Image (tube, rainbow, N blue to C red; front, side, top):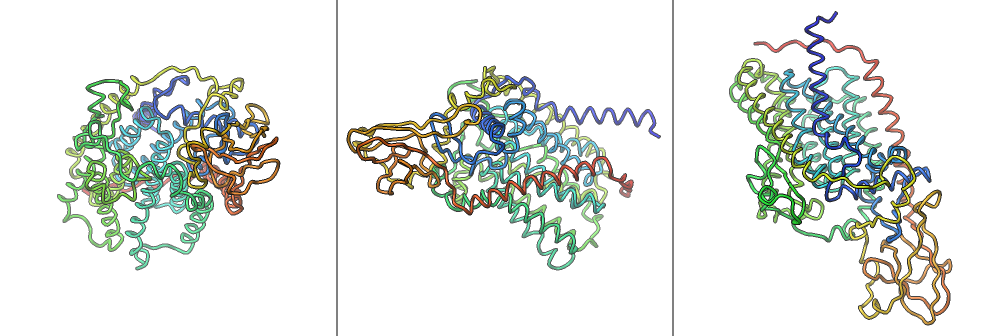
Length: 607
């Protein structure tokens, strides 16, 4: 039976947990609030997917609006993110769907870090500080509020969640819970890759390095992997591979040909704003130009991208505790202990590498192959924070194993208090800067209700046609040909069963000539004239759109999106697998939350 003091402690703990999750999302409480940069674009994407799903019961594989037909963005960008938010958007509208999605991923991220920390630190205050600092991280809130980089926010939150559940799996004693945490780690890792391609690139590189560090322990048999565990890991990896297969296949075919891959072959640095040494390691949100000039037209206001200094401070303190207690750390743990130390060294090295890469053009010049995928140097901050979290977890295991937190509890409490105060102050400053850029916008197409969703077709321009077309697929018209070409726009249905569907258009030519269209250039888009596909010599591009050379007479023009058969097969298998994984995850989570046995009490570390 719980005593009054235990009940009060549980209430206080619950309030603290809720506050940690709700505090960074306070500005989202108003569904009409809008934020700068790409916020409206992502909101539009979610709204389009939701309305398409409501009308057709399926997800779009290409986006069609009045001004642009055949935008292939769904094939490459947010391959898993937007379909997962679409059912909510279909019912509640894009504004609420986005807010609920952000609240869910933030809550799961916090709970995952908290779960791992509970196993590792055995120190409630330290555990809370780590988890809170993760969801309050300045750069993640910059993505959410100031940059409107919604896909990146979801992807990096999913990556942190995957790392945390992996740590919980590695430190869990119950086999049932260990399998559950491992399953969740895999699910969120797949979501990371399927939500944001730039995040996927560095995530894949880091996962390969982690695998190489863990492999010696597996091959020597000192990291025991049973046949059952190996079979489950193989099955989970297979499911993840099936889910991501269409995206991987399309990237293999076109990634180096897309316009987005040609934007830059070098990293973009903002030295006058956040990509300086101080801007990267500042304890609080820092953007020099915004601080001096306020909101102007120079770009993103309050572009603040410091690393998570709270995690850095805790990692440094853990290393200090290891230095002090190195003689008391048991050495009989063998290779298993050595693998943890190897992962710690890897995490610290990866952090230092990415931090140097993010502030030094001379270092970045040696790794230009990352540039087309990462583009902006400050994007590396999220991966620096993940590396720091791994360093905190691995060093925390070693410190807790030697009883370091208990033996140096007074100094540890001072460090925790300073870190928590820094995190709280940083959050307050960031919310103030985000509040400055908040605007009220009348966007009924994103609101609850269906009366205005036709505006998703008529009043939005898909700017990413400039990123996800393949201009080399068709030769460009010269200036004379382009100036004399007629233009025709294929109509797109705006409501009901016709939403997002492309109709045909007729044109009558008094003499042969070029006709420009509103169809984006992409290899899987076929233009039919009077029901037949034209020879390649009669197809070109005008700007980023298809142009056709037609003879004299009346012509009926249609556009059909026809992916190759392998992609279609992989796409259907992926959709089926996603539904299976969601069903398994939901059922398993219910069993875990409501029908699990109570864990045995942990023994306290020796003094």
